[in-house]
Amino acid sequence: TEGALGGQAKVPNAAGTWKDLTDNVNFMANSLTTQVRAISEVATAVTEGDLTRSVTVEAQGEVDLLRNNINQMIGNLKTTTLQNQEQDFLKTNLARFSRMMQGQKSLESVARLIMSEVTPLVNAHHGVFFLNDAGSTAAGGELSLRLLSSYAYQQRKHVSNRFQLGEGLVGQCALEKKSILLVNVPSDYIQISSGLGEAPPLNIIVLPVLFEGEVMAIIELASFQLFSEIHRTFLDQLTESIGVVLNMIQANMRTEELLVQSQSLTQELQSQSEELRSRQEELKNTNVELEAQAKELEEKASLLAVQKTRVEQKNNEVEMARSALEEKAEQLAVSGKYKSEFLANMSHELRTPLNSMLILAKLLADNNDTNLSPKQVEFASTIYSAGGDLLSLINEILDLSKVEAGKMEIEITDLPLVEVRDYVERTFFPVAEQKGLEFLVSIAPGVPATIQTDSGRLQQILKNLLSNAFKFTEQGSVTLEMSLADRELLQAERGGSSSRRVTKSVLAFT
Image (cartoon, rainbow, N blue to C red; front, side, top):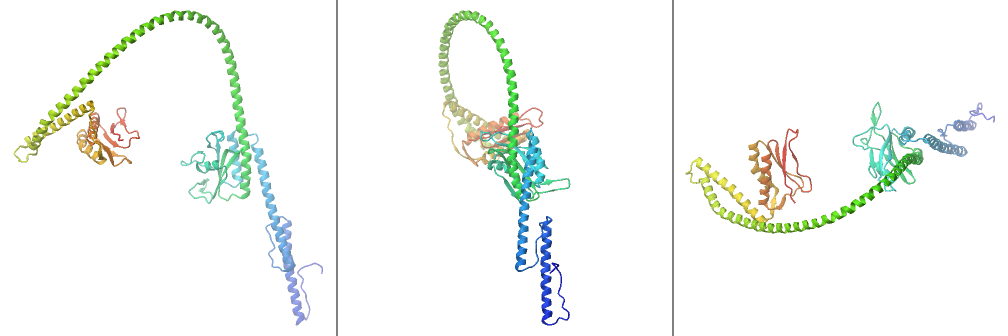
């Protein structure tokens, strides 16, 4: 009845029903005391600003309703307090950054300020600031983002300091003009380093800095912690202010540039005015000279008329000489035709006895009857080899006569490049060994295994090319590379200070 809790009923000599009644009253008083004290402790803590407490004592009826109402009140106070703290964080820091960015005159200084202040404020530990220095995309400029400032950034060889539109997350953020949030970043993505060690971040956020829909910059932050909702809201609102500041600085820079240009133009105009005055004086003097020159030109015109007549006479003489040259050319063509026919006839006449001689020389060189001495067999082989060379020379003369007569025929067949390689290796490896040179033959990737060509003409061309290559290469190597015709293939290194000279003969196939 006095409001004190914790009292107990004491009935001397109570027994039976009275004792049970006394015990029940004492139990109820004890439970009520526990509940009221728990509620009182939480209420006292809340009045002192501690919103982490709640009433956890078991209760029923009106006491349970009171407990739930107090807990709900604490939750509402906690939510309201958190919202007020977040709004205070937003307003205070947005106002603080607005004051700090005011008066900044260079893009570098404002970028350094932003990275040094924003990164620790949102519990980030690594950050970069990329500036769009390629002009407006709406005006047709190609967006290019350049690294301008950073926080705890460590340059890596495989990471660029410049990104184009859509390139990497930085370029993609600029393309979409929206924030990009990465969670659970892989351990090999990036490392945040300090003097004690390094570790990968947990989250990365990439933010676009816009002004009137145009990308001004991109900010990328990395943190060991999750970016909270209030931090993300703060960053979104801050980027709007940063966009305004960047645009203002760029506008001021353009204004200063225009002012400098205007001053330069003013000085140039003054200089041009003085120059114009001097030119007017010169023009007066020039007019007098022009009058004298006009008279001189009249005299020259008369002289030119005489010269024109002489030139026409010369032209007629040249025309007559040209006609004579054409007649001579026709005579030479006829003479060349007769020469080609003569060479062709002579080649055919020579090939018949030469083939017979080659057959006999081959029989003697084979010495199937073994009735010749080794020296005689060697002489027969020499005769056969020299005859073969003479036959090749006659064939070349015959081909030349066919070309001049316009009757050259090309026999196109499928030719495996492996056979070409085997031919040149078989033919020129002995030459390379004799001259002490290295001979390399290669087929480039992508070259078809078979080509369509005249194998005889091709072998003749290769023989001529490689013969010249070995002839003019004193040391080093000769290389034959077979590759497609859409590349620069010919490479020759001669003379100079090089200790090794290489001549490469290359044939392009189409």
